[in-house]
Image 1 (cartoon, rainbow, N blue to C red):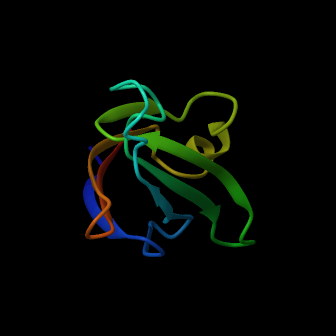
Image 2 (cartoon, rainbow, N blue to C red; image 1 turned 90 degrees about the vertical axis):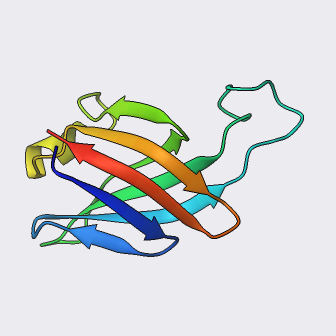
Amino acid sequence: MLGSFVLKTSEAIENGNVQIKVVELTPSDPCAEAYSFVGADRVTLRFVRKNDQKVLCEYIFMDASSTSLLSDQCREVTKESDVAAVYIKAINITDGWAYFELAR
C-alpha cells in the first residue's frame, strides 16, 4: 500500500515523478441498472509525468472498485511511479470528494 487519499475535484497529489489529479466526479444515473458502470458514481483521475507535464493516463473509476494500471491504457504510469493499482473506496458527489488508495 502506497497510501490512502481523500481529494476534492481539481486537487492533486504527487510523488515527485507523477501527479495524480481528480479531474471530475460523475454521479450515477438513477435509471441505470444498479452496479453497472453508469449506475455507479465515478471519478476521473489523471496521471501526469511531472518533468514534461505529459498526460500518461486518464481513467474513469467506478465507486467501490479496484483497477490495475498494468493494462495497455495506463501502463506508462507503472513505469514512471510505484503505482500499479487504484482502489476507489468512496465517492461523495454532494461534498465533491473521492477517497482512494494506491498500491504497488
